[in-house]
Length: 64
Image 1 (spheres, rainbow, N blue to C red):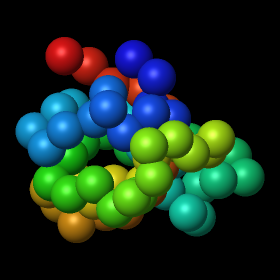
Image 2 (cartoon, rainbow, N blue to C red; image 1 turned 30 degrees about the horizontal axis):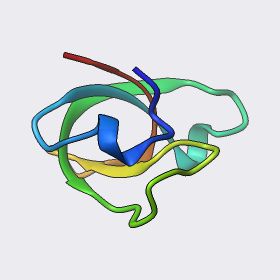
Image 3 (cartoon, rainbow, N blue to C red; image 1 turned 90 degrees about the vertical axis):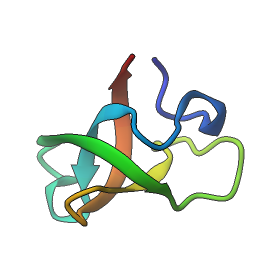
């Protein structure tokens, strides 16, 4: 699943995100989407989301 397109992401979806502090290393964090923070349909670095635990980052991949 391509995390750069908003249409692929919805609340409740399990995803891997890259936190702001981990952008240089590319380390991912897993969690479940609570809110979608990016308003545009596409973002080249991934749609920004807030996970249920409150962490915010850009989606790299998702699971159905």
